[in-house]
Length: 97
Image (cartoon, rainbow, N blue to C red; front, side, top):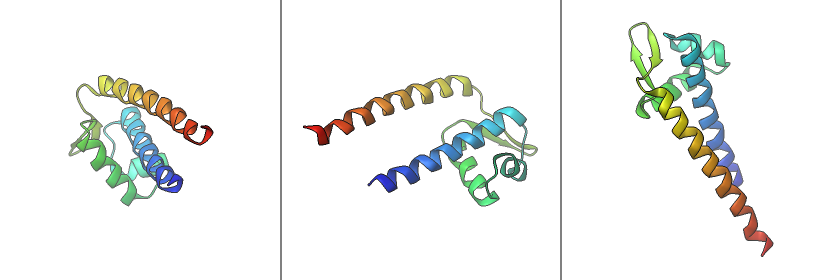
């Protein structure tokens, strides 16, 4: 169970690293992101697809760019992460009862 959760968190972390690269260096292509983040192009492409699906980046002929309104979406993500941390703390109590 923990291994599965750790793998998923790793994927989400990779997506956020890719998003950070796009925000910092747009427009930026897959090869540039992969080099900046230090992951292979296949995983970079997958993360970009996930970020597109989430409405955080847009593809252009020159490379990925931040989507309109990405700042508000990042605030939502951060609030959601805070909620997940609280839930994780609650889950730790199950073994204590």
